[in-house]
Image 1 (cartoon, helix red, strand yellow):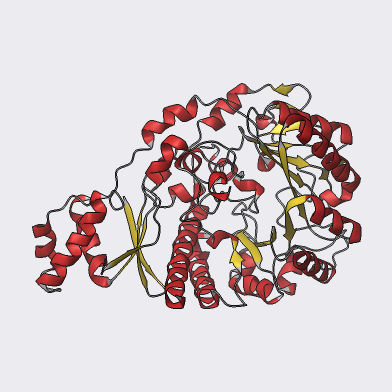
Image 2: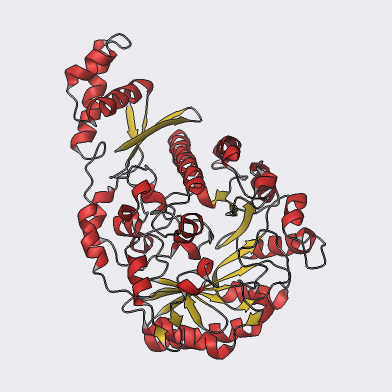
Length: 48
Length: 461
């Protein structure tokens, strides 16, 4: 495309059916402890 | 639902439901704005052309509208919300516990002025967790973890190194049990570094998946809020030890973690100070405090704080792919391998899959509820008694919060911190408004940095 560059290829909608395995890190265990930051977590399946 | 904004010279459009991020030129930015204003994306080509005919040539307009419409058709722009129907499945999921915050020591050798644990005591008495209680906690975790393999245990306090023998013994016990039960423990230590010595250093590197090192930034900033018990500053005691530890971990799997307050609203200087000290994994977070506290952030601080985040992001953008680059926890965002929609909907897991354990084995929904009798859920020996609390926390998700419904950042924070909501509004299904404002700003900066990263990588290839 000439006017638009899309940065990501995966669509969040597609993760509804296969998601939710729960193996990923709990957000508060990473560094925050006072805020809830989920968007920067990594999917355990993507990491494998 | 979309969110479009300009930051550091980039025109950015986030499609909230698909998570798609588009970097666009001025023409596409205007086309998308018109489509959003007119009909939430379902706008005819003619209507958009008419709205912008006085500003752009017909050929360029037509070409851009076609590009935008192809994204709409691909459900990457103005995409529908398919998630609310997934909530029924969420509510009926069996509750498993996968993470514990072990309060190894309700005691501390610092006297931080903003400490939510009230210098380690959590509104109670000073106490150290015994091995027996810690062992019962790990047994409880394994027994309630269902088929989850990865189990997380954070050694927290107060200051956990004040009870380090128990930390070591619990790690040894956990390692034994993970083999027997086909589990994998990920241990984390959160420490202020005062007692960090050779032995602890080596143990941490051997056993801890992650280590959180508490420091606020510049010496004067750190020492004002993080004094020792005798009033002297802690900066000089901890910095060399933290530098050595970070280096010995190859600058990975750790965070130096600070808190900024009303006293240092110029916190970008603290982040950059930590970067100048050589740290590559940095988290500096806004203090959460009641308005009556002198150090509490105020609504009037917001313009300054927004500008600071912008300043920090612009500086980080310049450093991308250079030796001076570093990670800032709240600007990290994983556009490709990020969490699934279910994780983003269901919140932080407090009160369900994540629990805090006091030195005497009491269970609370998270570390921030510890000491509040209304949230005492049970104990590690007898299990959870307050199933009503489990149900309440299980129902706490993005769609249960009115304030989140129309927020573009809702799938980045998954509805925010339940404890903050409770402390400011008396219920867990609200949202801590000042925190939301800052969260939205951080998401904007994080996405902008991805745009820069992409541009730099394109240049390099």
